Image (cartoon, rainbow, N blue to C red; front, side):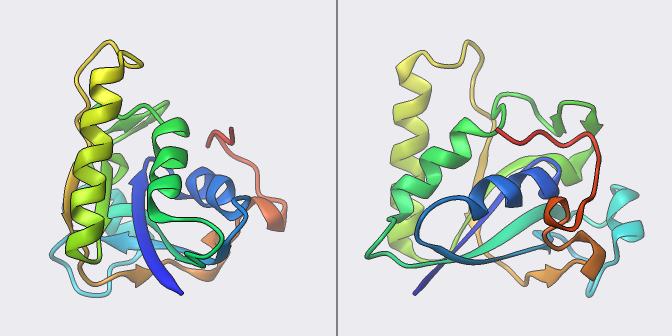
Length: 157
């Protein structure tokens, strides 16, 4: 099994989309990329912790590879809008690929360049590609939010 971590706006919708991918074994929503240790949702919502709402994924590379997961990532959000996805605004909603290995880093960079050059997006892609750091699991009510019957403004493709 391998791990991938993505941030693409509200983590509820990102998780729901990635959970549907064949080969994804487990997901968790949480906070990463910031400076506050063990942040809460309330902390992250201030926009002062540096964390992004993110999804940590465990996947079977024999079924789905990392590049395929990145393709899903590009298709479930607008990577050209800095610190915003739909109605959600703030640094916690930024677009980020958190890589776990040098191979993931090079795959992410090549994928970003390919998508940017494809003409799919009219504006430049602002997605950050940075090393994975400590992932803090979000409160339980955020996990698999839509599967628990949650409602909200997050988009599910």
